Image (cartoon, rainbow, N blue to C red; front, side):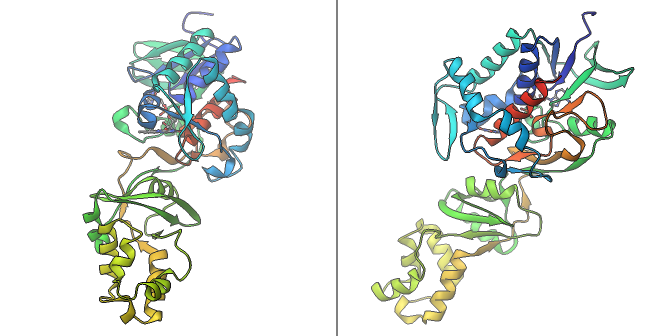
Length: 392
Ligand SMILES: Cc1cc2nc3c(=O)[nH]c(=O)nc-3n(C[C@H](O)[C@H](O)[C@H](O)COP(=O)(O)OP(=O)(O)OC[C@H]3O[C@@H](n4cnc5c(N)ncnc54)[C@H](O)[C@@H]3O)c2cc1C
């Protein structure tokens, strides 16, 4: 075998590519891992505010979005959060659960990148960065990758170049170009885990920029009970980021501003605090400026005692189902991930190999599998990378 020939070439040294290369290298395969960025694992380094939310102990297939909701099951079942935690523990990396099953490093995301690089080194993986992948061709059962001034070949190729979210970090739609080149279908990519923008009638809410409240946010059939944050462009915060992955242009995002309030709480308030205004009643449960804006929108000036029960019941139900009509998202520049991607219909869920091109694989965010906020996306990257790494 010449110096430029390998058993497998992995394109993209992010979470999925590093895992895939390390696992294959550990099996004794000669693996080349290529990335155009000057550094591997850049998204890992910035993730979780620099502490990397590396998995979620509540990982389950229903926390992933895909045209085929069953696709992720196999890989997720064969490489679980416990497997990744065991690796983290083996490397002596301290971690903690922050909230909702989300595990973060106590120290720094750099520890996760160092761990994966060490695993690659143990498997003899040849890691090269900082050059452009000019093109990829396939002839006589070999993939040939022109990288910088060199040409490399291998009978197996893994597409692990991620999705187009955060192009400033080196993210590209290269995975989709390659997939199309080899005849694989691509499900339309959309920004996900992304803030939503407000216009029209909702524009007044932008004045609440900086105010957050615990809400239940809904889009389509998805509902998340977490904090929502008003921004100078619209809506953000975990509840909104989560529903953004399900939201479609033209649809409403429905907010329950008081998900924990008992039924008929406003009628009770009328009986117990008849002199209070709607604004004061809301102010007892919500940030003051939000209470003021909502009360203004609802009308009903004066004391609660002066309102009919019917009007108060209507106000209560509006507060529980407040429709915002976002006019867009903040786009790939601000999206943590991408929904859509290389169609799962083109791939084996066991090995991630393409059904129509021998020895071509796709893993990680490049594939049409997108996790919820909270460590699920890394778990998919590890699991899918591991699935391919075991067979290439
Ligand atoms: C700000 C931010 C914070 C996040 N925080 C979390 C978190 O805490 N927990 C979580 O689970 N998920 C988080 N995510 C999502 C997570 O980072 C991704 O889902 C995950 O990195 C996907 O792994 P991947 O290996 O498929 O792609 P990536 O990690 O994006 O890796 C793709 C690699 O391919 C390279 N590449 C791209 N194009 C080319 C090309 N043309 N030629 C050569 N190389 C190329 C890139 O340089 C990159 O190294 C976060 C994302 C962002 C943007």
